[in-house]
Image (cartoon, rainbow, N blue to C red; front, side, top):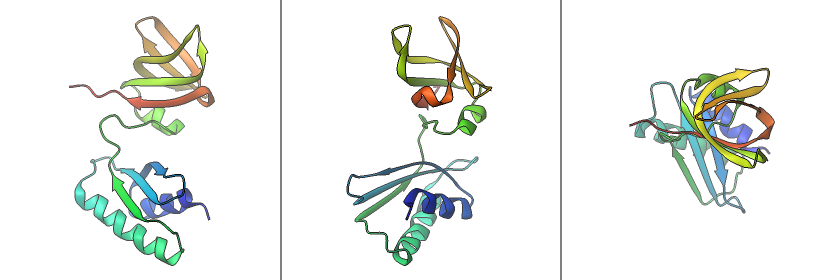
Length: 142
């Protein structure tokens, strides 16, 4: 059974987006990050946690602890849709392989064109293939 697909179905059924799912090596801890356009509050986390607990019991998912929370201000960008949605935001990204001796970049997200993520930095505009991005996250502005 694919736990990520199961969690995504439950979250979507309740009107939330599954942002990320982390599991400890033996699956004893399941950490779920959800989001919704208006933002996440404690009641949202409780609703998803309660529903997941029931579904996990029915599906015989063995775990010790379930944590449900918001992705935070430095939300990770995992899907192509995330890079489109947050165009104009400041992000930090890390590439799988260096480009010009550099793997880490910070700049303003320019969106997505032809499966490539556009990033405007102090050194100019870069275009990175989506599948070459190891991880990316928003950089909050205060």
